[in-house]
Length: 290
Image 1 (cartoon, rainbow, N blue to C red):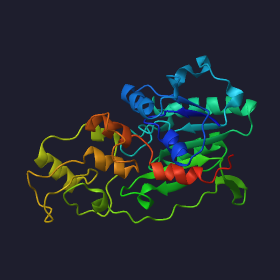
Image 2: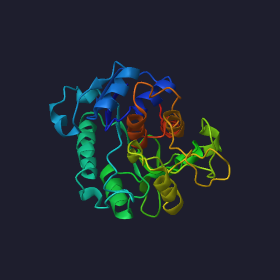
Image 3: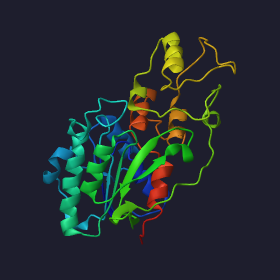
Image 4: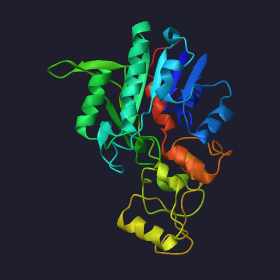
């Protein structure tokens, strides 16, 4: 199987194929963040880096041989945590470049499989636009089913579909994964939490607040932040801390040492901007392959 991974990040798709023992002949990665590329090549030196997605027409690829296209187009303009300008935004509009590539490959290989992920807080208009462009309506999973983290996401794919509704719309026909009932406390290397699940980790985890009082205040007032307490009374103490690298890896379903070559903050950037590995494996498990 030959694969193109757009917005490849830390290479979750490549790791998923490896964990499932699916042989990948050529894996092309489009990524521009240097330490994302460094981590990808550390784990899979055979990955072929092709660079910026905007230059896709210049890539040296035999397009007719591509069997699978993965995409996690930027969510910053779509997310409730972002500016909410939608698919017209500078970053999130890169989704349409993915569509260009997909349509180009479809002309040469109509059987190509594809996968696209984006944030669950995207508004219904943008979800509709993406669905019509891809010809299929998504399934919506929360990573809380397979991890200790709340992470609500849409997933579009033609791996397994069905017609639905009075107009026979094509929709993703992949069931929710079984709830593994993993709690936030279960993945901590030390300390305590009073939350059953961690809040969704974001790319901004790479820029943690250094003032612990402000960290504690934001935890209580806004909630969209994760901290660990040294005691079970959950009151302010100088010994509260942010999540460490091992805990961040665990929240996304990776091994404890997966990001060993990177600093904690660089790891947080990639993990917060990435995919939950067990979710990707679940979706890929419905694909027919040799």
